[in-house]
Picture (spheres, rainbow, N blue to C red):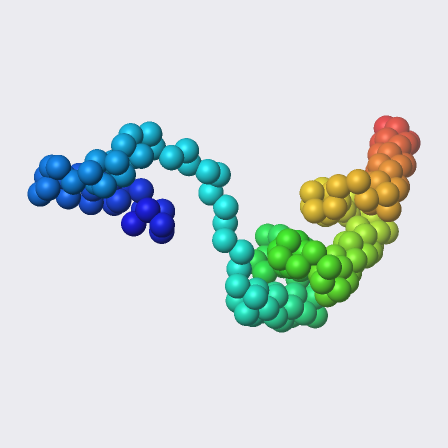
Length: 168
């Protein structure tokens, strides 16, 4: 029991042995080793077996391809490309499809923001920019687009104020 790290079971087995044979020197010696509980080591998550890892990567590849082809890039939709790319990158950091998926999500997200700005849908553009920022913090292109969004909103507000003044 000691060898397979069932410390408590091993301790109980030795105590039971001592009840039956109180003079057993080996049992007494081993029980003394159990006086101090072994320090619990930080539990390490066992690595996924290579076959299971490959199956999981293949499944994520399939799901990511489906999400990208359906245009399902962000939350709240389940199985969105942004989340799947992050999962795939965590499982396989050098995976080309994960990198490609991440780049596609960034590019399409930025394109969608630009279209929303052009259509003067600033609230939707701002919301999408926040989502993109949460997935890709520090993206220089996103920062530039957010600045453009602020400038366009400011211009729109200024025009609206001028119209109101003219109407009065």
